[in-house]
Length: 110
Image (tube, rainbow, N blue to C red; front, side):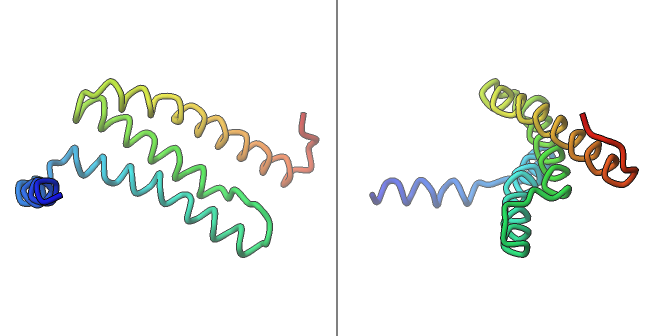
């Protein structure tokens, strides 16, 4: 236990924030923060809600994390774990925007 604590403290003392780490932290903040947005709207409307901001935060967070793992860290595990969510988030954002557009115009949805 003492070794683990000493190792953690030593790592914190040697922490160095690089521009790519800032991109990674911002991506993590966006990707995690989307769940707080979703929770807020679900509690507000007393039903499960996925607001537009959730999808924008998903796309932004996924893209930032993917950029960090490709260019900043060159980590294949991070790349693979963030590659698929980018496409799912973009797809869901497009579907959400199409549905919203159809509700405004009164067009039928397919």
